[in-house]
Length: 260
Image (cartoon, rainbow, N blue to C red; front, side, top):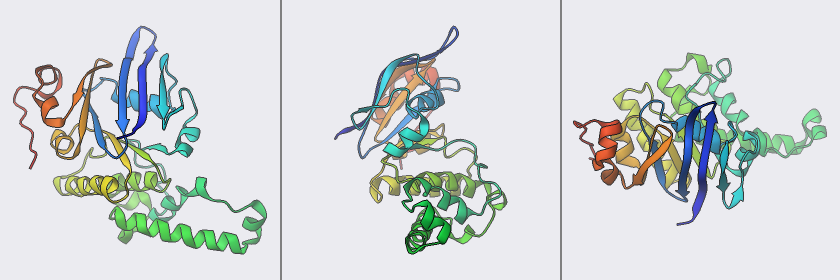
């Protein structure tokens, strides 16, 4: 299995605070890998480093063999490394359908003359974008909400929309930052099915941060654990969940993973 993302000795310091310190981590093509750890462990900071929203103090990041250390987020996204955010109201006053179409903007090819004149290439492109947006909305369970303003759809659907927006950019690696936050059990099950389909149907590699350990253990091929900015361990979910260091630092002695 090829390595898609490679972080080596990745660190960032804010004054005397070592938010991420000398982390080595690989993401392999075709897998679901989850990054877990207690609040303040540096998980979202790590995502920000590999996706370009923060510049590392030291260390390197490679994506598909290309050094992307310190590159801007839009440059990294164009390469196919795309992330979601915990906030869901970016396009609050736009319809669900139109917000997803915005995600296709970086892949449009029509020139300014065609756009101003509504030329044939623009019309063809608009038709294709609409078809792809409809497919993504169906995939994420959003099609029935396509005409609603984002601010007027249920919170759970807003969380699914953040995934749909990322899929519209045609990622090779999708980073999901706590996608299950605030979801009820039914919505969480829907999210699990979507993430598994992203991997198995769309063939997109998934890297996620999540606190719902039953979700993480049930869908992940590997887990990596951060604690105080350092990587504590990584491995198969059941192995990591039994690691005494992980139990002590994060899971708690009473944790019993549900892998059914």
